[in-house]
Image 1 (spheres, rainbow, N blue to C red):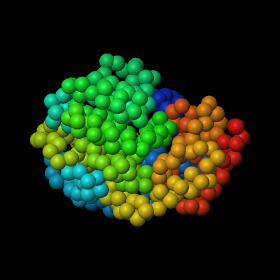
Image 2: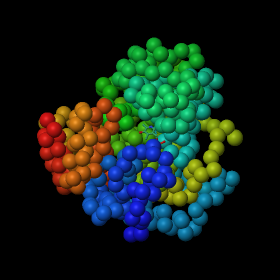
Image 3: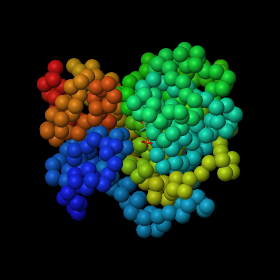
Image 4: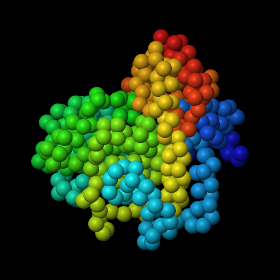
Length: 379
Ligand SMILES: *Cc1c(COP(=O)(O)O)cnc(C)c1O
């Protein structure tokens, strides 16, 4: 493995200090990663819910390698290999009508915002407190956290925020200028916050009654993460637009929106140089193949985590797990790391576990044992 020995120095001298980090991961396989010092870790972060098929899944590696040797890029001036097939598969999985690709989650939400505006002729949005929809300017307008949004005011579009899990608050916030409502079916960056049962169904009804588009941000919850292809399928509703990214292509940068019947971009209303390129679409199709196989096991694996960690009151849906720790969350993270396990602290001292969907029951038991001990040590 060839990497710079002085990566810390290079980073601090030449890279903008927007991140805080203390290790370099250089290799991965399945649910395991190895750092630059040769330490091995069980990975309950999975590149923030991105490496859905684990690290370097052979099916995904093969698809990328084969496509890289054929054609790396061609632009959307031409039909793109694998693109149409991926669109068809996403349409079938979502129950919606047409897809459009992007390079990230934020960009998928940008596309959703543009589509909602251009088709409704309205300008504003409603989103939820503690919600996260990305960091590009329009998606940032709908991302709540004041510390990351307020330095960039004024933002466009205008977005009003309501408490998460309260459907009636959404009704009250909708005005005649509201084009769409942005909701995460489970809040991810907030620390795996699961809304009351029936919430999405109520929001769906309110959007129907007020003629407002329901945009579900499934960037984190989608692609099998919650035990179904999309989290809204637990409540048997359909959004008007769903945005997808993180787990879609196993780490190859990609995002997508899929929209219902009459919601589509007309010629030149939207576009992108890289989006939906041959490598991304090849990686995504291979990822879908793998998720098709593992999806039936996801809920069962989540139940196992729930059982093993039950004393710590975990919030569990599929392989999304949140545990409220408080100020000691970084301490728990550190002691897990020392025991060879990577976990993540999301907002508000919430420990977040989002392992690869391919993780084994043995790995779950071993990781949860470490977590249990680490939490006990701070309580
Ligand atoms: C991560 C995330 C995004 C942003 O995705 P990027 O690829 O980082 O732009 C948007 N929405 C949700 C729910 C996310 O979890």
